[in-house]
Image 1 (cartoon, helix red, strand yellow):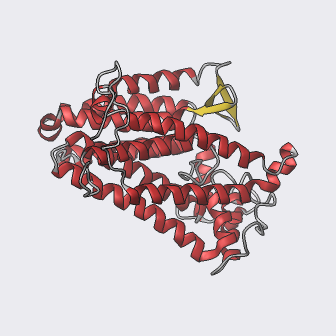
Image 2 (cartoon, helix red, strand yellow):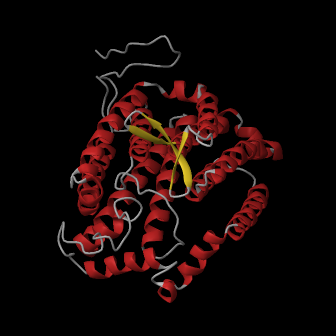
Image 3 (cartoon, rainbow, N blue to C red):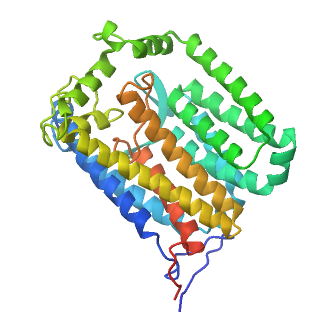
Length: 388
């Protein structure tokens, strides 16, 4: 007989043995985390030795981050989908407060010209990662409550756009251009899938693209990145340095790679390779086969989430469907942009690769998102197993 203990908060339920975990999603995530630990450790070992005198510094930090992330994900999993649906506005408000606090001198921590972190003991919270999670939850709840208004009326579409504008404005003040693009693209994708009128959608997208162009043109360093992206070898020791070094890493990898730990590009040719360009080092060390393996795991993760979203929608859970779709789009956007940047498909911008890049906030957000999908899947028994 299944048991469930409820807490004082409405909709907050402790984990029930009656909920079936989606094993495919769980195994897929575990494999990505394991590859992330190996890839990040290999990419960071020489940098850590030089900067901290401990070659395992980032590996130890990754394990610490993983333990905290698992704890946070476990707490998120215990909360029912009803809890997340009803508290979406609370999380949105919390995200706005954090994005404001990170801009306050003395509270926000500045690194490489960007003020994106708040120090909490030994951990550094990157507020934009928290904001991604909160925006997806809020938009999913809004689409559930205002489904007809979103589909039929102009104001139903404009209201979430006003909220999104406030979020993006705060993100650009940090600045965090990569997170801004991902959040906007994910929100637009969720609204489009919810059935918003096409002419309303196209009009707002056109306006957003014009704003995006204005943002790029307004900052010389962004224009420099854009021009370097078109021909990185023209300024390979200046604006095109990171991209050319990343492409060299891919070229050295060939079919099977140079072997784990044998990368040359991580020896300070590719700056801080354990963060945004960890995929380049992984491709150099494991070759095309290793790179395709990671791409396959990401495709399987996102594909499984979209399949679960359809199944949840078929069972009448509009919130669960919108939320799982949003999470899938969020992962897809981050993976596409990060790998697109490292392969020269997109202009260079700072954005982590889920599960693989070094960063506690990214790992916590990623595992929490997976936990939410697992919870919704378990509530509707999409595994196809009979509940005890």
